[in-house]
Image: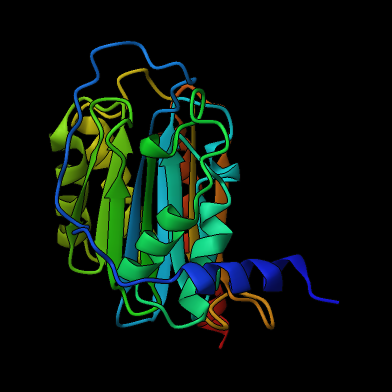
Length: 261
């Protein structure tokens, strides 16, 4: 009997088409009226380290437990961030299409084409924002025209930053700049990007939760473990500071284990 994942893959493969719109440029939308859906403000970063093969993402939002829905990753496959007027299924759909060998650009186009837009009044497809990165750091990003302002994204080499209900385009640009300028483990580069985005104004509604996911084949600290790092701060006055504390602890743990090898 076919599994739900195999059925989803078959449907997505049937929808797979060449991309017809550009992804990767910064964009912004001005919304004149109050949207009928509940706005979910988020800014996130996806990044790849070609030296280690690690791929990861980090996110901050003024919602409870943002890590439960935004970040999706699989070692040797890639990473997806899905946010704004969220369809959480974009995460596993993106990983399935990447595993089938499609480029991030085709993945973005295919997912959008296959979206049935089941709740256009409250949860419109026109408000989706998501970024797809493959296991080699290639990335494509989409910001829907009805994502709550300010919404947009910036793509650099092996990195993308995206967000909605932000102080402005300087938030995502600062994130990419910080990622590219920071040295060290991928987790520290992702962390620097979140901190830079917040320093540039961040989410205009404030802060509540943050998360980080880093994966690599056999990159974890235990046997047969592809998860290098999976951290969530679900509710805090300063979730980015708390995430930094956890990233630092994880870094010390990595150093101790490497010292025993």
